[in-house]
Amino acid sequence: MLKLEDAFARKFQYLRLSITDVCNFKCQYCLPDGYKPEGRKSFLTVAEIARLTRAFAAMGTSKVRLTGGEPSLRKDFTQIIETVANTPGIEKVAMTTNGYRMAKFAKEWRQAGLTAINVSVDSLDPRMFHQITGQNRFHEVMAGIDAAVEAGFTQVKVNAVLMRGLNDGDLGQFLGWIKHNPIQLRFIELMKTGEMDELFDRHHVRGAVIKAQLLQQGWQQKIRAFNDGPAEVFCHPDYQGEIGLIMPYSKDFCASCNRLRVSSLGKLHLCLFGDYGVDLRDLLTDDSQIASLQQRLSDALVDKKATHFLHEGHSGMTPNLASIGG
Image 1 (tube, rainbow, N blue to C red):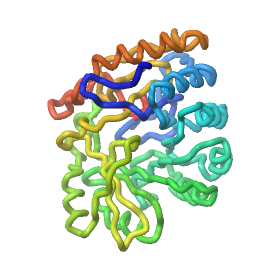
Image 2 (image 1 turned 90 degrees about the horizontal axis):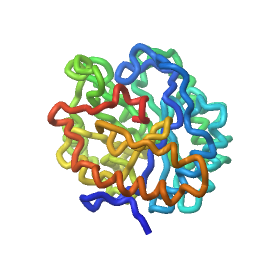
Image 3 (image 1 turned 90 degrees about the vertical axis):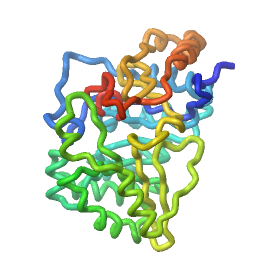
């Protein structure tokens, strides 16, 4: 049986599946000028998503994260959740969202089979939130987090991209927020993509600096589960919540890579910062093509590199994080 394993003995239990590249926010580190459609696009259909997920699951994938753009902009999003969740072998179905529709749909998504939510909240100051995201929706997003907890989600994670001169001074406020809230707060190191060199140079904050501060304050690092993402997670006896750090510029960041990406147009991306995508869509039209699809996935992994080469200033073909699911 074919398995998802590369030349460095890394196994891939985690699929990040983008279902749209459309987003209604204008985050400075992703789509500062807003989403700009480039012609008409035909995103993966529910049937194609079903075949793709089945192929990955049969090769050892147990976790699927639905991403975008903003995945909840798809009218058939609940159906997509249900389709993925009902795939034999898939144990976790997560989503990454800007949160603006959570208050209305969290319960429905939970009933469809969604097991975890990551929501972006780059500042707890509504004005700074507006400045970073381009949307004055802070209170809607926070209401969505409350709705997710009330709907029974036990894994609600909040993502924040820390940027020097903008929200890096919010660390204390963030820590105060999770003292009595069982939320995993994840600080994501700003990454260089596309033509974001100037933004990166101006606002990059090293995750290692934050890690050192946490350890000094008594936070302890937890052991990572086999199908967890790249975050280093820390807990503290005085806090109900946790801290996760995603530090792509840290040493050996790629050594524990366990995830592959498929774009909303059906291309396999071996790395967020890769130079090309492998087209899968021609093998998603018919159930009889599953074996051929699995062979293509296996063959593609031969070319997966040991690292992303970000340290050498290489950011690959990714123009922005929304284009292949961040």
